[in-house]
Every structure is written in structure tokens, then in C-alpha cells.
Length: 262
Image (cartoon, rainbow, N blue to C red):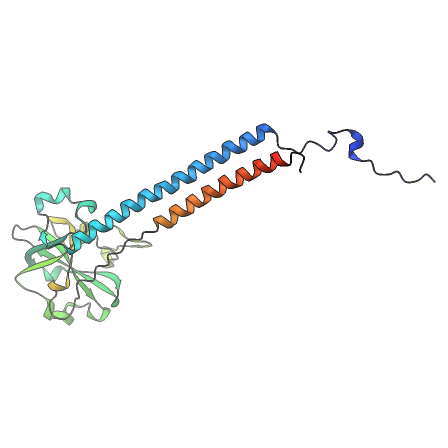
């Protein structure tokens, strides 16, 4: 019986038998180029978030200034086409007219007082135009006008509050259904059409607490809150860019230090 043959050493077949596992120079170049592209993209995303944060802080400051400023006249008919969210939303305004209490609209809402409805009532101005006024919140047991007769202001009145931009269509997963009287957003155009109103301003006004009558509805519940997580996002993108840079340098250095390592 012949003795078992000793397993051949790969070195017996020459230096190339095991294959050259050292990354080639071309591979390292491709790695560096790809890493540089990813790094630049992540840095760009981080910088964009820094710019967004600056924009958001400026917006918050402008809104705070508008909210706490003395009320000014609400935009009239000749100014309607120029009303924009950027220039007008949350502006503290004042307007005088007569409520059309028989054409109010209830819009589903949830506030610090619980679930219920916003009461949107048309206000007819002296020139015949109309502005929808969100007079405030009522709970479900006060949805019927008969349950809040004390607040049914008759005759000339003045409303102060915050100018808001129309909310067309409805809310996420819940669309307005005018035919069924189910409203989930304050869609000025749709509400005006459902109530047979014409010459209506393209905005509505959230009445403040000073415009309240006795009892319900309760005004002054506008929530002014802006999410500002841009700094966290920026640090995340910059952190990922740093990880890519460090990882790439590590791989290249290891390749140079251990050229024959698997």
C-alpha cells in the first residue's frame, strides 16, 4: 500500500496558484470615486437641511410677529388675487359685517377641548362681499344652533382673528362630502358653493377669543406649531458622510498595509 500523498501546498504551484487577492489599483480608484460621490451627495443633503432650518426659523419668527401684531384690515376684494400663504397666513386682521347665521357650516375638528366641530359662518361685508369666519369650537352636544342661541350675533359686528388660507379637498384619508354634510377641512370654495354664496374671499378668519359671544362656540384655539427637525436631519446626513469617508480611508489604508491579506 502506498502511503497517502501529502496534500499539495499551494505554493508548489507557484505564486499565482492561490490567486492574487490584493485589490487592484483600478478597484481602489473605483472605490474612491464611488465613495467620493456618496460623500458629496450626503454633504449636499446635510447642507440643504441647514438651509431649510434657516428658512423655517425665519418663517416662525415672521408668523410670531404677525400673530402678536395689532389687527389690520382684512384684505378686500381688490386684494384677493394677491393673497398667499407666504405673505398673509396668520396675519392678525379685523373685519366688520353681518353674520349669515342660517348658512353656517360645521367642520369636524379635534382641539384641546376634545372632539367636536368648527363653526364656519359667512360674514357679509358692507360692499356685499363675504368672508367665512371660523367662530370657534363646539362639542357634539352643541352642534345644533338652537343649543347656542345666545351666540347668534345679529346685526353689525366686528371680528378680529387670524387670516387662514383655504384647505381644499379634505384631510388625509377623509375627503369632504358636501352632499352628505360631512366636512373635514375648511375648504372655502366648496363651502361657498354648498351654501349658495358668491363673491367670497379666498381665505377664512379664525376668530380670536375677543370675538366670542357668551357660551359656545369658543374662539382663539388656533394651533400655531411648526415642526423643526432640520438640525437633526442635517447632523444625520453629515454623520453618514463622515462614516463613508472614514470607512473608505480605512479600507484603502488596510489594503496598502497588508497587500497580501485576504
